[in-house]
Length: 152
Image (cartoon, rainbow, N blue to C red; front, side, top):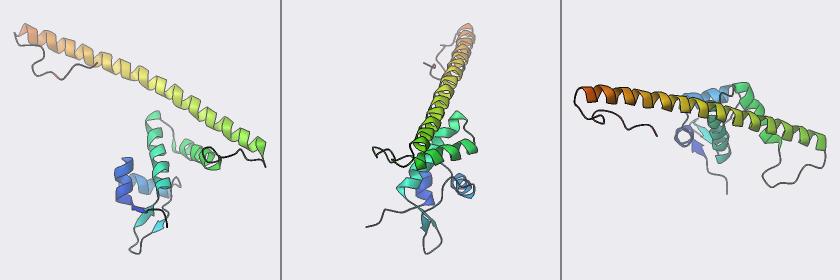
C-alpha cells in the first residue's frame, strides 16, 4: 500500500508555511511534490512535509536559501537514522559529517544570538512596563490596569 499523499493546503497547515512559500520552495528546488492528482493538484508525502518543516525551522536562524539547499543535500546523502556508514567512500562520509557539524555549530551560535536579543527585548518591555506603572501611579490608577502582563 502506498504512502498517504497530501495536497498543498494540508502541507501548509502542518508546516505553518503559506501556499505561496511552498510553491516558491518548489520553484527554487528546495522541495518537489511527489506527484500531481488527476486534477493537477500538487501531492506531497510525509518526507516532503519533514523537509519543509526543517526549512521552516532554519528561517528564524537567518540561514539563506543557499544554506538551506546545502544542508538538505548533506542530509539527503547521509545514511538514514541508524543506518550503517557507507563502506564505499569513507572520506565522502566524513566530509558530510564535517559539513553537518558546521551547520550545527552555526545554528547553536545563532540561537545564542537570538537569546541575547530576546533578553534585550524583554528588558525593554519591562522598562516600558515600569514607565507605565509610574505614570499610572502618578494619576492614582493601579499600575496593572490597562497594562499587559509583565514579561517574565
